[in-house]
Length: 450
Image 1 (tube, one colour):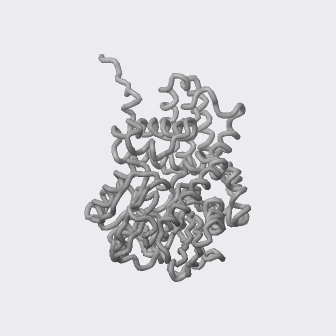
Image 2: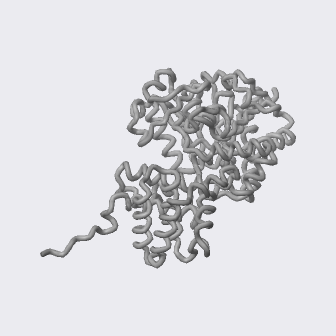
Image 3: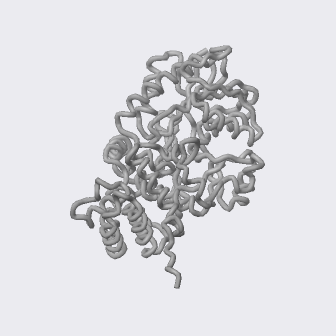
C-alpha cells in the first residue's frame, strides 16, 4: 500500500497569500518599507507574480485590515499573552496578526484562519517553536476576542498617540475621534471621468458625488473595469480632484504642475484645455505619468527634475502653477494605512522646509495676475495653513483668493474661515461607511500682484 501523500505547505489553498502578507507586514513594521514599493514596481514582492487574482486580492485586504486595526489587534493579543508577543520570531507575530484579523473582521471561517496561521508559523525556522502558542491564542481569540474589541471601540487605538494628540489640538477631540473612525473603514474606489459622470456611475454600479466624482464599491483590478482601456476615466480620490478645479477656465493657458506624478491632477489640467508642463523628480513616476496620459489620450510636456531647481524656458510666464507638495500624507491613511505606522512627527518639520522652497519656486514661475494653487494630502497644519501663512509673510506680492462654497459643489464644510479648502476623512457621511469619507486634503489659492 503506498504511503499517504501529505500536501506541502505551498499546496495548501490560501497559504501562499498569507505568506506574502506576512512578508509585506514585516516589510512595513520591521523594515519601514512602504506598501506601494512592496506591491508595485521593481522592488515588489516576487511572490505576487505567482498569486492568482483572488489570492492577490485576499493578501491586500489582509495587510490593509491589519494595518488599519493594528492598535486594537495588539490590545487583544496582549490580553491573551502573559509574556507578550514573541520578539525573537517575527513570523510568529505576523501569524497571530493575520489569524486574529481574519477572525475578528474578515469573512473567513475561524477554523481556516487558525489552521493557516499555524501552518504559516510551522514553516518558519525561528517561529516553529511557537506553533502551539499561535494555535492556542487564536482559538481563544475566536471565543473571546470580540468583547475585547468592543471594550476599546471608542479609544482610537488604531491611530498612533502622537497623531491623535495633534488632531485633537488642531480640530478638537470630537473631530479627531471622527477622523479615527473614518479611516478605520476600507474605502471605496473613487474615479474622475472625462465626461458624463452620471452615465459612468451607472456603468460602474456606483453613485455620483456632489463634486462629480464617481464612487463605487467594485473590487478587483481596475484595468478590467469598463472604460479603463478606452481612457474614459482615472482613479482619484474625491478630495484630490478638487485643487485642479480652483484655477477656473484653463482653456489655452500655460500651467506648470510641480511634483506631478502619478498624474491625476495633470490629467485634469490637460482635460480642461491647459498647456501643461508636468515636472517630477522620479523617473519611474514620470514614466507612469506618461503611460497614464497616453491611455487617456491627453497631452502634457513632461520633465524629470527636482521642481525646486527646474529651469523653465520662460520663468515668470505661467498663467497657473499647481504645487502638489510632498508631505506626511496623514490625510491618506484610509487608503494607505501604512502611513500611520511609517511616519514620525519629526518628518513634518523637514517636509515643511521642502514645501516652502516649492512655494517660492511656484511664485517665481508665475506671471503677474497668475494663479497659484497649493495642496497637500496632509492633516497637519504645518503643511497647510501654516505653510501658506509663511509664504504670504515672505512674498508680499502674493495674496490669497478665497474659495467659495459653490466652487466645491456647495459643500461649505470644506471651506476654512480664511477661504481655503480643508477636507477631513469624516466628511461626506453615508449610511454605508464604505461609501463615506474623503481623503484629508488642504488647498489654498493665491494670486500674484500685477
